[in-house]
Image 1: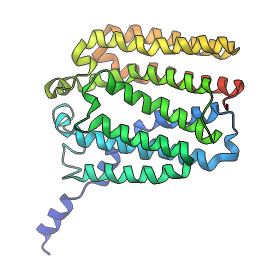
Image 2 (image 1 turned 180 degrees about the horizontal axis):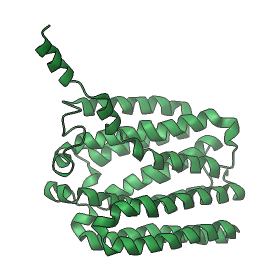
Image 3 (image 1 turned 180 degrees about the vertical axis):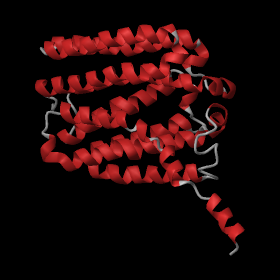
Image 4 (image 1 turned 120 degrees about the vertical axis):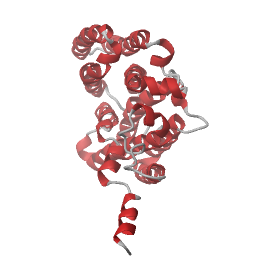
Length: 303
């Protein structure tokens, strides 16, 4: 084999660093955090179930979330060529159909790992895998909708992992309060995902992706996102007060006030400030999730 032929073969293989970039480790935190919120809220000691806790964290973050990122990048390769041509697939660092093969292989891996989490954990894994493909792939491609797309991602990033962590530890369906709080934080995450769409505004507009920043414009979309993030948290505060957890409710209230301050800054320049808000206001949001999880633990997360 000549040197030229050898170099050609190497160029046909993906760069290892590009493969890691493809599954975006920075995105693993939200589902892992939500899974841990579910574990805490279940009322069952994680120390006696550490294997299930670790397996669920790996499944929620690197495997299912990583798979969803690879699937999204493959299905979005034409949009990314406009918005972010430096990404692994449009840049050629993950050539050919490697992005698709990675997403499919990780889908199979996710289902195999989910089988070890019992019927509730496996069912949630199946839903998560199907949702990831429904979001990105034709002909469903819910990403085209500024309502259903962010709603599905919010559900899979916050609500589904929370439900799964509670169900796996409790070995059954979570209690009504756990489901209610997980659902509220999943609804609020719709606003977070809307802000995340700001970075793809131009490419989405050209490729017919009807995100809220495209259909409403940056200013109105940012206002809608703020309202969607705030109202579920206020509902959480109300529920915790009704359930006799005033100190937890007060702590979340302080965090919401901090988000209101950050929202004012966001609304002064929605397109420019969206990445800043994702690093400040979102941190307060997820901190409130864990506070709510500990409140549920004290109430009694298991049915």
